[in-house]
Length: 114
Length: 111
Image (cartoon, rainbow over all chains, first blue to last red; front, side, top):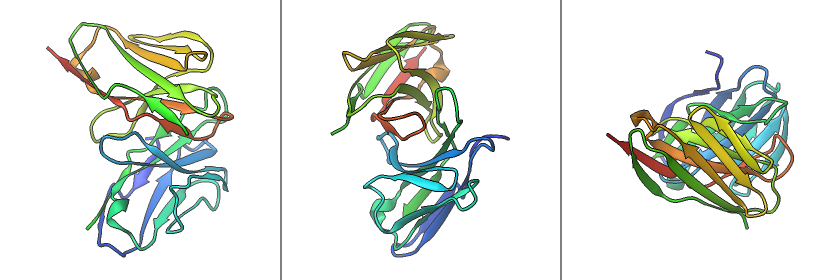
């Protein structure tokens, strides 16, 4: 399978705990994006990387959120001191370096904070 | 602010044609995308418009008018499997940057 992969697919955590998600993009894509989606809404942009450089962060990305892409391949998204409002589907996408730069999404990590 | 509007829900019957409209007001425009999302799954790319006019891909076509801030997705010969949410998304700045998504239109196809 050469698509975008995300792990874990589901995460249940208690309020106040830290969680980390991983995204492996399509291998030849150098751009990687994180989005968050809640029920009945479209995905909301969080942050994006070109290679290892984090080029844009949404104001939605509070200081409890941090993302890394240390070697320009996989990326991690960490949420510290989780809150119930963080419950959502976290989607990762990657895009090629030419053409329409369309973004290809992974299956997502569904986070439930209890 | 950024605003992308789509109808919340639409219904249609198998074999019919349906048009899903999207209007946008964004600070900058560098392309409009349509994605399909089945319940519980990730969005999948359907089409891309950056210039005015119609782009056709099989049963799906997408139209863009930049002066009107308007796009539509046309689905022909509807099938039950087309029941899904259809997301309109705008890229505001240069290629490769983030997308702003609408809330999506849930299409229900009945037999």
